[in-house]
Structure formats: C-alpha cells, structure tokens
Image 1: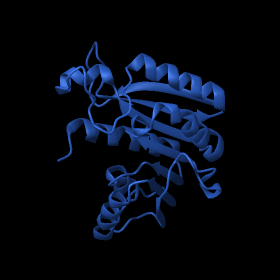
Image 2: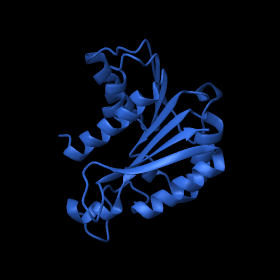
Image 3: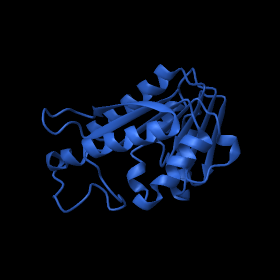
Length: 198
C-alpha cells in the first residue's frame, strides 16, 4: 500500500518534470516503477529511460508496464548503475532520483555527482531524500533509519549544504524545499532539491 507521503513525493517530482517541459527523461534508481509508470503516461515526454541495479525490481516494473502500455513513444529499462553511465545517457532534459541517493554509500557520492552532473549533465535534476528530522513523527527510533538499505539519512541543513556545493561545483543553480507534509519545526517527510543547468 502506498503511503500518503510517498504519493506527495511522486506528485512533487511529477510537477518538476512537467514544469521543465522535458521531452527526454531519466528515472535513475527507478525500482518497481511507482514514478516511472506515471512518467510513462505523460503526454509531453518522448523518451523515457529507467535505470536500476536490481533485476527483480525491473522485472516487476516490466510486468506493470505490460498491463498499462505507456503513452511515451520510446521507453527503455536498463539493469545498470547510475554511477557508471553510458555515453547515450548524456544530455537528457531531466533526470529524477526519487528516494535514491540515500542508498549510495557516502564514499561513493562523489562518483554519483560526477556521473550525474558531468557525464549525463541533464538540463534539470530533481533529487528527493528522506528528512531525518521527520523520523520521530513516523515512529522511527533515533538509532535507526527508515529502511535497512539506507546508507545515510540527512537533516535539512545537511542536504541543503550538499545541494549548494554540488550546484556550485557543476554549473547548476538549485532550490530546496520540504515535501510530503510540513511540520512547523521538523519539515516534511522528505526533501527535494531541483537543480537547473546554467
């Protein structure tokens, strides 16, 4: 069952893709395809590529797409790592990483940054990640993270510092905001950075 905060994350990222007027979209870490299936129904998108390293997730996504054929003319799924992109992934209009970066080991983040912002270099990048400050409201104990595969969970200040550094290093401007609810002190369940190439 999809949670309310997951639905709000999906809506926030879809709004970024629509606002960017992207015709070519990358879903990096697409998993079972909650976002991918919705992107595949978007009338303005002409090419959609999804990458994930987990073959069973991609198989489940293929089964979902078979039940509801995509509206997008060119749809591709790849079992591949977003940290090692092939040259044909360069220059997409928009890339999205929905609750993905927290699954990357911290010592591999610089590799992801270079792959995403130097090699792929999309016009717009939307990245969402859990907001650690919100965890108590979800019943997550202080010594744990939301998912056993999470390598880290950042508070809002840490995510904003990382986003600003990355944007400055690679020639993007960035804006960050809370998504998936809003507590006056703790922010949203997730947070999103939207990078635009300058």
